[in-house]
Length: 350
Ligand SMILES: [Cu+2]
Image (tube, rainbow, N blue to C red; front, side, top):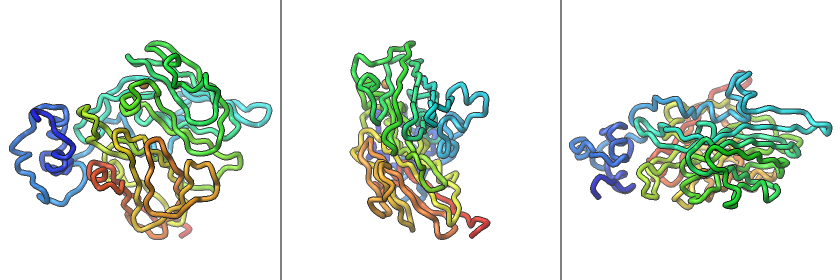
């Protein structure tokens, strides 16, 4: 008990909405003495505020930029070409070349709560990789960390490109080139596959891997949502939950969408230590394309549950302007940071 706070007692203290505030919460999860007077002052139903107190000030993780960035589109040229290059091939498809590196970096996942992450290219999640089926994907991976790492891509490829066997570990300072055809179209992911796997993944080594069908999908406002969580005191339970790393990021900065425009969410679950995660969208329904491998939706719902590693493409259109809540339907996850808002605004043509 001394200095260690379980997830349950964390919740009883009022979670991250506690009046003690973010910095005190940081002290608790790092095992330092909590500010007892402040903690004692917080009782269940002390107030009905949800979410974090204060704002993340570090710019290491940018949830709003991450949403709609792929193939390093968030970087200005010529910096982008340091990490991503595309070359047209005789058959019309593209050779897409990526530079991905592992690096250790402290990231702020909630106000005042810093997590010692292992990252791809300094960010959590790693950069979204996006190709069209039939393209050639070539990823040069350099391990700049202090542990062995790999990149294990989901999708069809030769076993030598799988990045999963002990002999395929890339040692600190070493590099490896992963090369394969983009197949099949859908929503996949990539992650480190070095053991202990849950530790390597949970530390932040994962990213989305989108393969578009040759004919594309209907035009839409597209965004990537990675359901992730963080075990800040290394007790094999998560203390902070999020979509795209920062607790409640989209409560503070709602995701702007247009009424009447198709919205497409690429939803991936990489949460460790919990069997499932979920997304619930308020006041609306969405079409579900499981793993994105079909162009025909399999269901229409307002709540979707995904096991770890599962993903789905969700499509919907906002009918009304206003703020729409979305969050994990596990209330505990929602109260520990996995909650956000869409802000739908009437477009010029609606
Ligand atoms: Cu690793």
